[in-house]
Length: 500
Image (cartoon, rainbow, N blue to C red; front, side):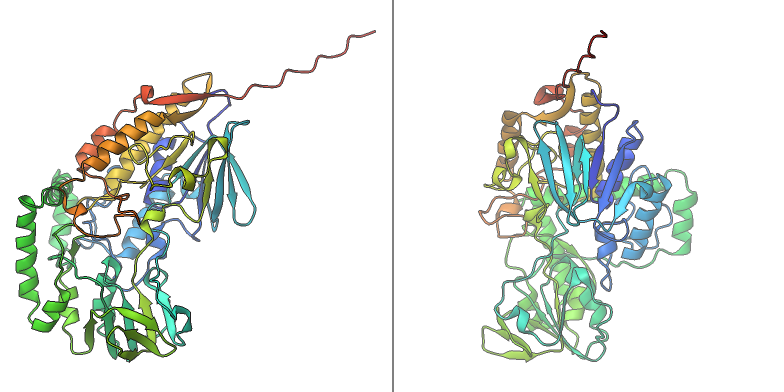
């Protein structure tokens, strides 16, 4: 590295961006700037404040390995506690001071001449960087359904990821569109206070039980004071997650065990035959995200709740019209329709070598070597990039592995006097992508349409294997898989005129 220090810009200050900054700091990188569009660090845990918001991965694993916490209040802690944890870690490690909040990045542009990136915000401000880490993840761009008349509704309407706490719900008629992971958490909470709740569902979900009660004081004390118990619990949850992945990878064998358990639980909870018929999934266990809740199915059977499975055909000024021609008049519409997971960093534009846009490089679907590096985009790294989502484990495990891999890449550049950037070889990335896609064959992921796929049917979000395998593959960066971009040539110094 010919410059005095490596300038790194990290886009996004959630678990990925914060974890990467800490990893780089701990290995001597000092010129680090994080850009976060929110008013505080925290990423999705700052933005998502809907009632009942919590992680569906147990907190002892949904946390950094270098910053474990023994006083989690619940098995799966609520949003406010996760945000407090993440902001506390950021402050403790000096990341908060490196973060510029309220900054939405519009573009990242590579210069072949200067061998550096220019990061431009929507307000026109720019940052120059030797390396860019895009840590916006897969769950940041809101998805709205394509329904005629969406803008015509005259009542209150909002997306669950931008919950409007100023809109009263008590005693009102409410429609919820979507029954994904967020809706599964907030519907049981709002069902207690609304007058009438219509839940519009396209397809049912497979459920596993989760009684997310507060930990008794004795349990918290044991975890805090018993040597090794915290580590044991973390390891137990880790292996449970790997077992769920095994069920999804092997639907004809282990997957049947998961289906049997889910079926028994759901039949026990669904006492209403009509609701059971409507709520029951019609696809292979694990093809879509398996959800954990002991509150959702009982909520659907409340007397003030209606589960609607007829397709929505229109939104009117007064309510929602379904395919049977019925219009349900409502006061509020809440869209629990998730995120545009396959769009990744859009609407931000990324331009690499020779002026090639990332959207063009990904014309057939997003792809990256180990989900981190893309040919043609030197020293650009992704966190929670293509094919790094997990259906059974904790994304934090993947993010820590990616942060260490990125750190190794930058160390290789820093250790070479003639190098200014690093770029994965196209043939290496292409081979790893072919191998990765081939491994989906025979798994549950291929047996239905889901948000794991793009419009062409390619699975672009999930890793096809286990957490342990991913951490092993990213443990040591092989420099032979990369090329090193030389530093720009310096203009020759102008000679001083000879004295007369």
